[in-house]
Length: 313
Image (cartoon, rainbow, N blue to C red):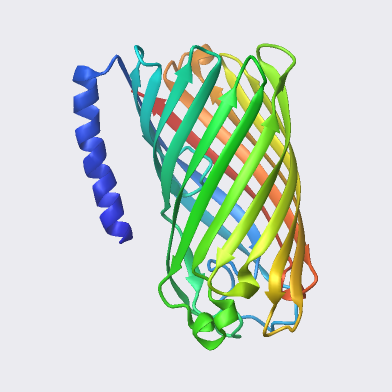
C-alpha cells in the first residue's frame, strides 16, 4: 500500500506542476532533502531494540538516522486568497500531506489537510523478549482555524487512524487490540508583541478510541509556543506538559496505565538570500521528550535533531 501511495503522489505531482504553471495565479515549488538523528528508548517504538531483557525493566535506547525528502508544491489563487498544496512539511513528521489553506481578508484563515505516514510500523507483540515488526497504516486529517485580528485564537481538530496488519498481542488479549483512532482538540491564544514576534499559550484534549479498551485514554496538555519570523529567519519553539489516563486495567501488568510527558522542540528555517544564494534555505531543529509511567515498561524518552536544505524553483 505504501508503494502505491508514493506512486500515486508522484503522478499527482507530475499532473499538478504543469497544470498550475499554465493556469495558476502563482505556483511555488520547493524541494530538498534532510536527515534526522534520534536517540530513543521506547518499548513500543518498532524501530527500537528487537530483543529486550524483560518487560519489568526500563526500555533500552537506540540511535537511528533517517534520511527524508523535503518538498512543498503550492498553487496560489490570489483572487480567492486560497492555496492548494502537497507537502512533507506539515506538522506530521514522516508523512505526506495534501491540503488547502484559505485567508479571509487578512482577518482569519482556515487550513485543512489529510496525511498518510510513510514510516509507520509496529511490533506484532511488543511484550515478547524477541520481537518482530509488522506493517501499519497511519493516516488522518487536521483542520485549523486562526483568527488574526479580532480574537487572536488558534483552534484545531485532528483525527488519526491506526490499522496494524498483524496485531498478534490483540489476538491474545482483546483488551490490547491496537486498531482504532485518536481525536485531538486544541485551543491557543496568540499574543503578538511585534510584527515579527509572538507567543501562543494553550491547551489540548485528546481521546484515544481503540478496539482494546486498555489502550484507550484521555490526555490533557498545556503548551506554550513561541514564534519569530522576518525575511531571513523563521523560528518556532514549543514547550508542553501532558498527562494521559488510560481506560482499563492492563491485562498483563494488572494496573491501569497512567503517564506524564514533558516535551520541548524548536525549529529554525534560515534563508540564504543575504549571502547570495537567492532561492536556498536551511532548516534545523531539535526535540526532546520524557515520559514517566506507573508501569516501568512504558517509561520512555527521546532526543533528536535534524538538518535539511531546500531550493525554491
